[in-house]
Image 1 (cartoon, rainbow, N blue to C red):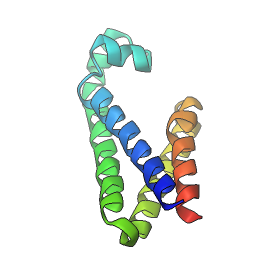
Image 2: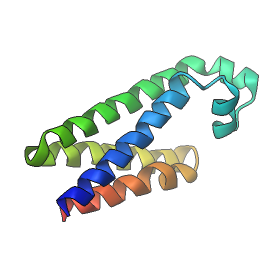
Image 3: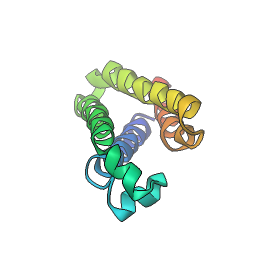
Image 4: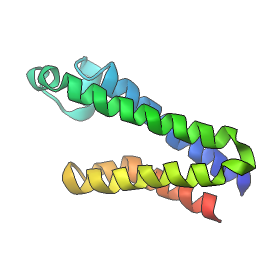
Length: 117
């Protein structure tokens, strides 16, 4: 089970690395606009906000990787950062789109569940 929860946590980190790239570097590009359903003028106007969100996703990635690299002693670190992702997924679902819970929250819940077993 230990390996399974580390793999699940790494997958959550990879997802958030992808969000970082989309929000910080691809927000105004066709790929980023397609993923988020944005019109070019809106994407340009919100570029700085998206980059800020991407940076926060980078902090989640850093925390999750830190927890993984700590090995067995990183249990509490992994629980904390996975919990942060779950909260962000719930908040995003409540305020922006239910899809955020599926894409962000559910994988974190699975990883957190495996971590707590």
